[in-house]
Length: 310
Image (cartoon, rainbow, N blue to C red):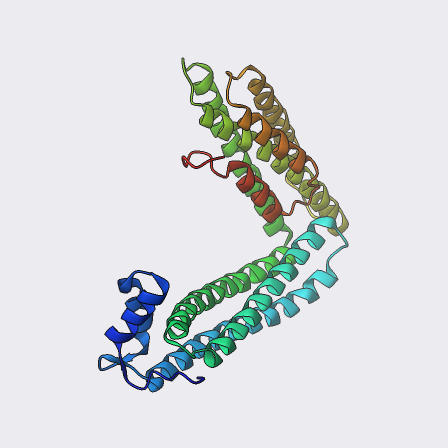
């Protein structure tokens, strides 16, 4: 642990030292140092026990990622057996990217743990180690949850690949959800149009939702076309009204978009944000990478309704 060693240093003494050097709140300092305390004092043994506990949590995260990776390998067999369609490739690539991100996260946490083990050479460093170990534990637990969810999603993807009824039911569910969203936006727009002084932020939010619905419709059209081709290859029945419903959604979304031409005057910031978002979403081709869309929408909404500078 370097030249400095706690060696049964009283917790109150170390808190005072760290507070004096950092200016941080003593109660917060005490919270992060508390795992290192044994009988009122910070000891090397308590620190090492805490580091060991955190290492076990990280090992659990590594194991969950390994299990998700194995499940991913099993699903690859079903992907290989499926036809070469864009909707399959997009889903498969998304799982690959998410697993790679989780693996990178685990590796980064391992690097952090190593630096914590070797870097506690001053009172402030011990405190910073307590903060790092807390954050490391929280992040490792998140990885465990995400990896478990990813396994579940991979199992569902495999079932989707192996069953035409599952694929078609999922498509119908997506169309149902899009229709509900479109109806909600339509209701909001009608309310705003009949309100004497409508809230500009509500107009903006409805406009954002309408732009996203346009992306949803394009994605549904692509998915329906690929699933219909897949069904034809397998000589399976395909839902008869899906195409008409998607076309109705396209028309309704276009009508909602035109309604924003009659919106009341609002701040230039909204126009700028919408123009940027519209350009970004226009560049998104189906099958849609929804994480990218979410990032664009989050950027457009940043600071809106928070009172922060925009």
